[in-house]
Length: 631
Image (cartoon, rainbow, N blue to C red; front, side, top):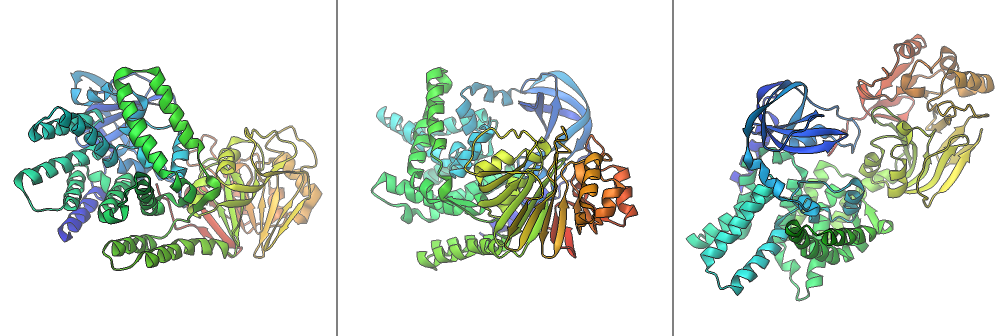
């Protein structure tokens, strides 16, 4: 075990300190072609590395091309819980995107990668990771904690092999022939899956198991499983940072270590126990636990593994529209059965807590502690972040969300969201938020409302606050109270207040119709100005004058020079200013003129793409968030 641990550390170091390639001038094989935002996204394999390249031209899987260009990485959002695309790329073996390229097709083809073209059924492609489930269905399956059932793993292969063995037993085939057919089947799936690491790991395990039986080697199946994972890491070193690979290892290990716990003469009871185990094992990754969904887990398991999976294989050969529709109906029935009202959301826990969490499970597997101690310890671990949320004395976050606005205020467990462009949902889930007191949308522009419907769908929102003059495109009805703000309304809550200024009239312009509001907490006044422009600023100054004074200004319209006139800066007199803007945005925000105006009035400003997410505790405690992102 110590040797295994040492090798894994070496692999981690090797994978993280590979020389970064900045330019490409080499032959490459196109291993995947997919449509992405009206472009063809080519996955190019050069030696053992993969790169993405976007083009309008058409290419085929297996084409060999000559490519010359520069390798770039994506901007990383500096927001807790946000999706880190570069880490994700690295975890799937993609080392960047090729830009400013010259691409020449050569009269050569690599037929090894064309085996995937034999897979026609959409859901079989999903099982083999050759296609993705649509975003809406994917999120619903995540809520049910059964997304892993739609990725080919040991449980699917076990069922398939069991089925093949029954057929071979019926024909009375010799053991050697049976082994050969099973290994050939796994090898075929491996080729058709575009050399997926999950299938490679299972193939390794069955080859090792076959060698063990023939050579009569005294080694446990659990040791063989560990060895198969290690071999997979050697051939796919990038998996050392792949979350899916880690989850797979943890689940398979748990199924091995807790075999006695799973025993039951009733199939449904056994599947319930497996579901409970998988939910506990994956809790630190998915941050939610739903007892009602857990009760239905055996049904989900049977439907996916014993119905949808074999139907997708059958349909791959038959190409039946009836079977395709039947599969989709079953998937729809599964996703409709979500019970989000019974979901327990857990805040993201620290690395130390995760280590203790899994250490407790290992101690239980070794019979060092009993189930009562295990459950009580886990409950204590996952409740600490929730307790911190409820005891929060007041924190305002200006999220690094790209070219848009997203701000979140938390005090004593109450949550206020002011605009929701990007990274809002992931941040809230990272904090373990279930209920939102107020969702305030300053105006109806996508760079302020993009995630609004997702928030309304995924969280319990008590009040949705909108301005009086905008037509908000909220498509569905939600269980929330809509509150239309007219002017000079005040919300007073324990420990904080929100004062809404005008608009006193309809400006016939969504930007100028933005809600302007002042959030007061911990003796700190923060003025939010949406996307108002100078015309509206003049009216604000004329109507309110010194009443606009605030410690912190959320700069209007992402720092555009159409806003932030000297007059309003003079009356607000902010000590700090926050500018939410995306890196290299096409508008050139923030404007140099806006920054000069702030400098004239000695206002210290923070720009989100430079500083990342900014946290405010009071007017003397404002700084970038150190905690970055996950994936």
